[in-house]
Image (cartoon, rainbow, N blue to C red; front, side, top):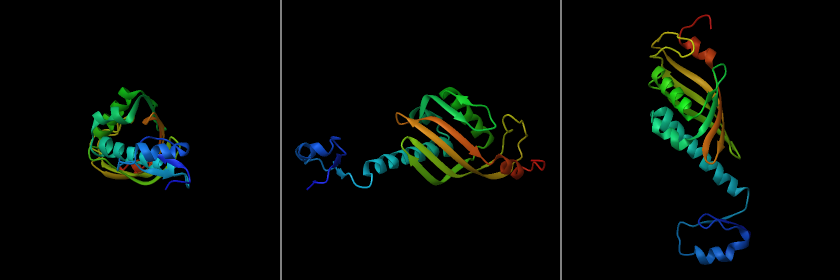
Length: 183
């Protein structure tokens, strides 16, 4: 019996509609009534955002599925990663991913920590890859070296899609792993 208030996963009715929920969804085994305890609704939304970002990383970065960008990114997506130029729009973001995959064709991203607050997702982890193409914006030739680079990303979501991202990567550590001594 649902007496403490909450919301329904199926019909989305809240605490004032508990009896209605019992009638409209009682035969639907997929419907769940969540009690409003310890921010249950926020926890479910956080889990959904985390899952979406995990799929984005796996499909786009780890498997190079560029078509998936349309599903995960807003058409006016913005990406900032100092010291590189700001990337604006889905077409420019697609070019960025394409050129990154050309430099690091075996890139794999691993997320070690997720923090979700509202529509903002913060991820911390590392990526690995072998440099087989010249580094963009520097034209450093391919080294053939494998690197492991720590990163932190702040991602702002809008309407369920990535709207803006700020990336902070250990570029100095990457250059040192590539054999650039003066880095």
